[in-house]
Image (cartoon, rainbow, N blue to C red; front, side, top):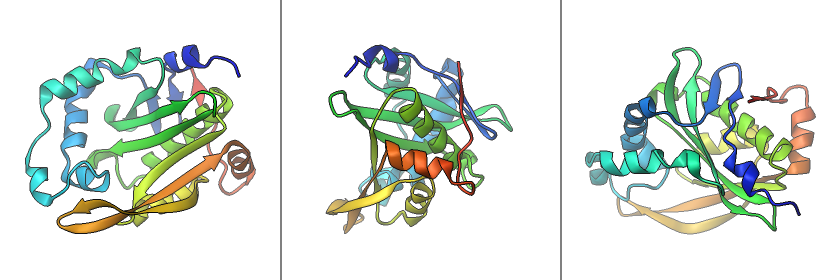
Length: 207
């Protein structure tokens, strides 16, 4: 299999009807801090283990150090999600945990309150999957979603992800055990799904 490190090192701009996915810029930090610090984001991503944890704002120095280095990574892809209606960064999408020999990677998405309930996340996910399979040559993209987030699970199923199993009692939140649902989409499944006239995603433009 060809070496894909240089490909992951290239940070594309992926353009859809509602969002643009692009490398991070210095001006994105305030919006990203808002998204990462949102209590609902922390709960649904498993970043918090109790409602009390949500009261602690993210450390701005840690966030700055993290996002200022994302564009230099060669084994993962981190992109800002920009709402085309406002031009504002509303979150991030990530392909990480790359396994070169297996042509696989993990996917995650994080959107703050301004990026929700308008289909931005669905389109951003479709753009990333198109890039993963059409340009990066991946065979498999996987993710985990907690059982108390059925809305996200439905959104993932809508773009082609399939449930593969469950990690029981994977997270303890507010003293209650929560399962984690394992999902993935394979390249051939993605291509069949994309070809369906009712669910075909928009083709990304990359620069």
